[in-house]
Image 1 (cartoon, rainbow, N blue to C red):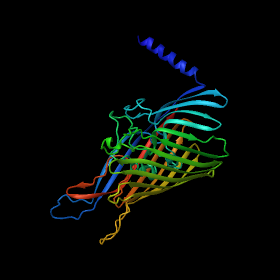
Image 2: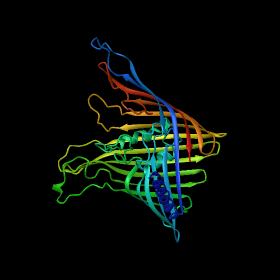
Image 3: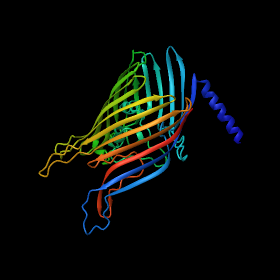
Image 4: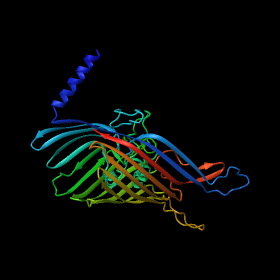
Amino acid sequence: MKKSLVALAALAVAGVASAQSSVTLFGVVDAAVSGVSNKSDNISFPTLANPFYVDSVKTSRTELRNSGYNSSRLGFRGTEDLGGGLAASFWLEAPISNDNGQEGIATFARRSTVSLSGGFGEIRLGRDYTPTFWNDTVFDPFGTNGVGTNLISTANSSFGAWNGGATTSVPGITNVTGSNYVLASNTVGYFLPPNLGGFYGQVMYGFHERTKYDPGAATPDVLNSQRTGRYVGGRFGYANGPLDVAASYGQSTIGDDFFDGITTKVKTFNLGASYDFGVVKLFGEYSKAKNEVDNEAIFFTPTTDIDLKGYLIGATVPVGPGLIRVAYSAVKYDLNVPATLFGTIDDPKANKFAIGYVHNLSKRTALYATVARIRNKNGAGLTVGGPSFVTSFGGSAFQPKTSTGYDFGIRHAF
């Protein structure tokens, strides 16, 4: 019975391969020993009633992680030549957790698209990376992986999360809803053709796939059920020789209250660039995101929007078969809280420095090491990963201060 099933599977694969011009199996297996230490400072005053007063509390963890240098993945992609310059393609890519084997090809959450391309460009449908995420990762020397990931990426990951959240019911399976920051589901995208003298670009629209009721009064009174999940964005740039520069804008609906006429959106703009001098490659990015609440009700309570601004500067330096990577990034939240008789409230902010080295043993295999440190101020609580900050202990209140981490690992691509 088992041999028959294997034979049928082999015939199925052969049938698929014969219908395609090319089918490729590809992947990355990346594992690292990682350590993180997060420190919180006491912001309370010592009193006789507080016998457990301490200046600070640390949480730390050492673990084996995946995706410290490149994201671990397993994928299949293929292209069929339709003639006349047309081609049909598919791309199915799954995240894998090779450190514990908990996650494999149970979801193609990293990308699952089918497309048609030609002289006009490419039309792509499915789950794909958003235009606004590309600048965060392309112009980051650490590629938004591991403890070196820039703070723009770290901060926006939670800043753009859907209100109320959304999780899968299966433990260990990557959540494919809940945020349009990195990827968006149910999208239609268009990409410019690659022969425009260095100019490139894309636009994307993601359906929220919510049920519409007529009359509107029949709509269930459930928060975040009518418009949440919609995404629209675009990215345009120029790459020629050592220069690459791109700007992007995206708008993600992260919350709604149908009967109160409230819609919450995150609007993101970023501009990134890199220039390769040969002996060093420089990177830079500026980003601004706004958490904006639109209220269409006649009578409403004024709401306060929140801004998130950030920047990144970095470099890579080739050294023989290796590469030195370094980056500094910073973010600041503008809470837009008006001043009172007691003064103004200091806005949360954080900065991060990361440095690392990659040693290429071959084109597919590399050893790497990265260390990074974040400094939080005024209530910001960004981390390089690991356990949460302690915010209360022994009757005292604590505020996030620093987060320090390292990765030592190996990456193999196939």
